[in-house]
Image (cartoon, one colour):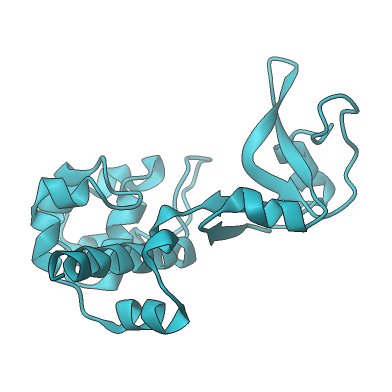
Length: 192
């Protein structure tokens, strides 16, 4: 039974966190060979390969069987955040959107660092527009690059008709907010 379950947890130090919890690393099967998944772990007692210590079931097959993989991701942006109040301040501050017109700034940013061409073409001015940029850098929505915001808004969050990878709105908004935090950290550090 397939359950649509997709949880990503971003943190400053993935390895420190994983030392604190019982988990089994997920696996990827490619050409009948299993390798450890870069970020996925199971909090359930999924069967493991005894010598390797990671799942004996490919992550896609495991999802079909009802296992719940959680992706635990390192996110270096957290290293610049002092505490929860600081994070809230960074999230609540309107960023200097014009910074996204500078390639050297975009190159420092989470997920869009290699996509200055798309960012500079669309010049986002809101969190939602930035989220749509994040969606358009995925193969399933790449065809929207260059269209008007009005045309993009109509279809960017709809599921693709094939299995082409695309970003869900919830992920894109969360990642856009991470970029806002980074932009505000850049401004904060340059004013010191």
